[in-house]
Length: 361
Ligand code: PLP
Image 1: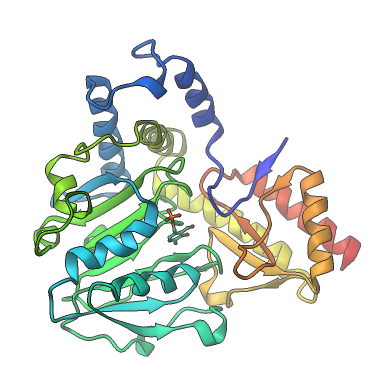
Image 2: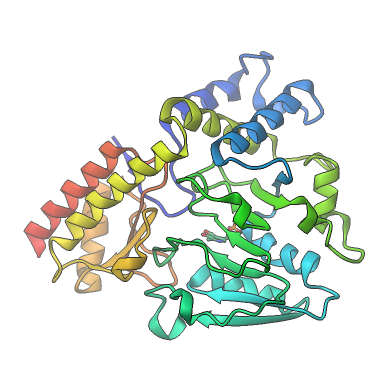
């Protein structure tokens, strides 16, 4: 069997893949292929409704938050956020830069207004996250932006930063649905699908109604959150296929897994096993993240030299373990343990890491 430990797009649950394969041929409900279904059909309205309902149930999303299905990936959110909430204000937006992805966000904000980086982990090669007392937060920021899980470096916030009165915005692309979150701490949450939610092509945005209404000025229609709120994500043709598969994933998470708390248990067990194997050979495997900031989703690590890393990747691939190469920005290796990676797959990887260290360490 082949196993996928890729950082993104990640694996999808096996039962969802089977249902998807069938739906490409013919949907059980309509007898037609999902790929040819109209976004104006009653069938798709029901898919959208179930996807939203499942997300609300899984994450306990209150009524005064909207759930939107958008396109453009998380990268477009880097721009839409300041377009809607920074443009035309005298306020500054605050950004925590804790890795490759969070570093991209303030660059886009500067096109729209004043963005300040209030903490930057660059000089420490993004090996740790800030402590609360290191953040110089101001009470009157337009918003505070951070990335809850740094996909490339494998750093995950244990707790949300921020001040009570300041709208908190979070890119949860690589850990939404991996465990429970307190939605009410946030003004806006976004996450593209291709880690824990489904295939690429759709991005989920969860935003508080009063914050959304604060958006100012005239924006291009497609780039204004209010367009997507007012049309319930049906302003133009949405990515029907991606939303359908996302709906199947949320159904699987509620049914087979039993919710995000149960998912978090499984994710912790997977991460514990893999980190355990790496920590057992400290002179051989070196985890990128400081211990207190370790991610349950992405484990970035290195071997003593790049020759051994190449050997590692070749041997892993031969044994059916795929996607273990590190992100092109930092190199090295990375094991991603998104929701669809089973306990069995994590156990196989754990054993494989141990065997490899015994042989070459
Ligand atoms: N934010 C995070 C945390 C990511 O991991 C990624 C990509 O992996 C992005 C943003 C960019 O996402 P997209 O490719 O959907 O624009």
